[in-house]
Image 1: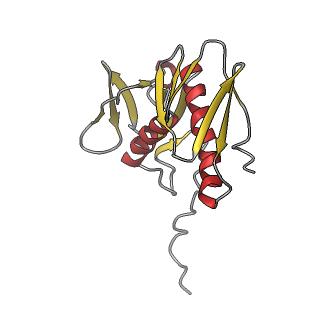
Image 2 (image 1 turned 45 degrees about the vertical axis):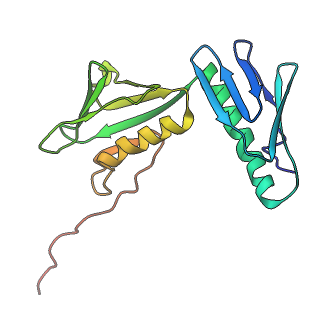
Length: 185
């Protein structure tokens, strides 16, 4: 049995959970999310908890069991507390700033890079860090992660000086660089 799939999802007090055929709707203080279940998965709700069950023990059903449970759990977490991904911007002259609802990045190119916020995503640039930290907030974990990956792709961290955009928990392995000219005898 899938260890992830058999875990019970407890619903917080403010979260409304509804099942309509193959559709699962989760509504909370932060927003509302919808997910379509695979054919072989079923969801049952009782006494403030949700359980995901599978139809058979085939290999694909076992894999989908854990995946479906994780997706439903992420939906519950997203609408109740939300998700946040933090990016660190390192480099001389590299920064981010908000202009209205649009994020503008300066990453060492000859031009500024505007990044519009997708629906359901909000950017936050703390003013005390002078544009070197960027927070990406949203209720859908997949969308938050994809937006963070797209922004990181604009200028990935390089291994010599560590300049670029990286995740806050990412460790950049540094290289030594050139050691100098060889001595002549």
